[in-house]
Image (cartoon, rainbow, N blue to C red; front, side):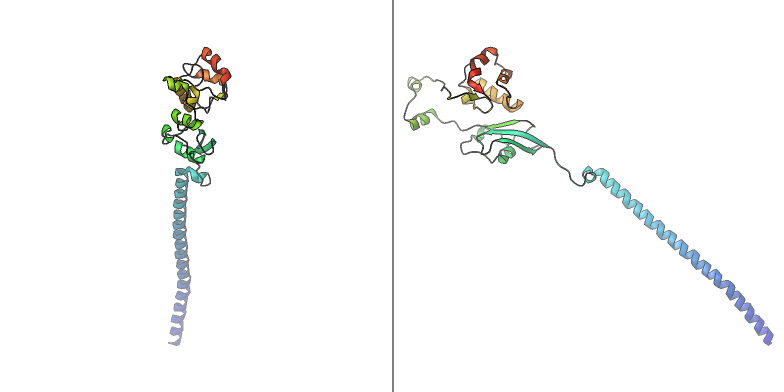
Amino acid sequence: MFLTGIHLSVIYLSKEAIVLPMYRKSLLILLLILIAVAGGTYYGCYTQEKESVQLDVAANPAVQQGGTEKGAEITVYVTGAINKPGVVTVKEGARTADAVNACGGLLPTADAEKVNMAQVLKDGQQVRVPEKAVPETTAAAKSGSVNPAAKSGTSSKAAPSGPVNINTASAEELDTLPGIGPAMAQRIIEFRETEGAFTAIEDIKKVKGIGEAKFEKMKDKICI
C-alpha cells in the first residue's frame, strides 16, 4: 500500500514536470504572437502617417520650400502729384491705389479723377497723377494781369520756362510743344502709361503721329 502511494506520487510529479515546460512554452508562443501583432499594428500606423505627410507635402509646395510662399512682385514708376514719387515694388495683382499709397499718397493738388485707382498694374508700368488744372482767369487774377489773348477771345499756348520733360509733363505742358495739340498730348501720355517711360528724347517718335519733321521742331524744347 505504501509503495503504491509512492508510485502514484512519482507518476503525478512526472506529469507535472511535463506539463510545466509545455505551459511555459505556450506562454512564450502567446507572448511572441502578441509582440508580432503589436509590431504589425505600429508599423501599419507609422506607414500610414508617413504616407499622409508625404501627400500633404506634395499637395502644398510651400511646405517643400520651408513653409514660406512668397507672392510674385512687380515694379512700377509712380510720378506726378505724389508725396514721394519714384519706383516702388508691389505685389502682383496690385492696383494703382496700392502703388500710390506706397509713395505716400496724393498731394492736395492731385486730380485723382483723372487716374483709375482700381486699375491692375503691370510690371514696368508708369503711373502718372496729374495736378488739377488752374483756371486761366484765376491765374491771371492772382498775378494781377490779364492775357491779351483772353481779351480778344483767342487762345495761345504759354511758352514753357525750360525744356519739357516728356516723361513727367502733363497734357497741358505737352500741348505747348510745336506741332503738339491736345489730342497728340493725350496720345503721348497714353504711350507712357502702356509702354513705360521714354529712355531718350528720340523715343517720342514711337508715338503714332510724330515723325521726323515734328521731332526736329521740338527736339530742342524737350528732355527726359
